[in-house]
Image (cartoon, rainbow, N blue to C red):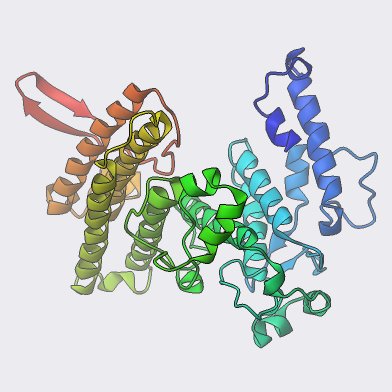
Length: 402
């Protein structure tokens, strides 16, 4: 947490000189790595004491995830410690987030991969039954796990886990789920977390209740799961981050899978002749329309006087949700490769898809102006870097729209 704070904190110790922040941040990063010593981020036989590695070297020597999902070092050694828990996952989320915004953007995927695999191993994607062991998984998974013998020695009944801890497990999983979709789009890679493996997991509690309820009330609220949606949802059900942004990421996952399948080198060639692809695109477009309808419904609800924070969150959710909805339509109907877009070998500019794309590009640009006017930068929709340029004739002459 100190390392995170050091990235933007304006304390005198961090602003005394041009290298003060970098020096303090580096020391805190080294300390963070040393505290993760059971996961062995340094080379074998090398003591972490007295060897301060730069961030890039830390990333270079970091372990990676094998395709089978077992976390291994390049030499095949075990990565996880039997005592790995949710705190470790949160640590990797923080590391991945900071490095995603640094010059080591691509290397941050290593940190995210560890967090995704560890969350799956700790079964954060499953609701714990009353008499299930936290570390109890499928028999096949236990046999394949490189450290299953260590994990089976740790016995913890789900009865020992409070409702608050169960909610924390859900929120961490859904946060990783959202980041997975975002990063899959950024780096053009397959999804790491699938919808089917969390289809029975409860959606997170409304953020207002989670933040403001008293502890004695929270336990009762969390115990009552009747009416709470389970699994990935495509409709907006509240105006918190998990309520309006998580459904968008669920739809984005479908768009990514759809586009990758349609452009597959072997099976994608049948896309032009098979109406299945058009039907699937229509289904995804209908999901986006349903999402926008539910978002507008929630955005039009009356906010009581004196609750300025709720009113602000309402405007933020509607503005960003509307903008990203338009961007999703562009991703669904438009071209992802700018070179293919410019070459236009299939005459896409004259198709109906181009008309739909330009319509939503205009809508996204209009929403952006309202976001800038609000002067509240809550979540930057930088997941999409697609630019569309076309000419329109009006009373003012030619106009370029980007």
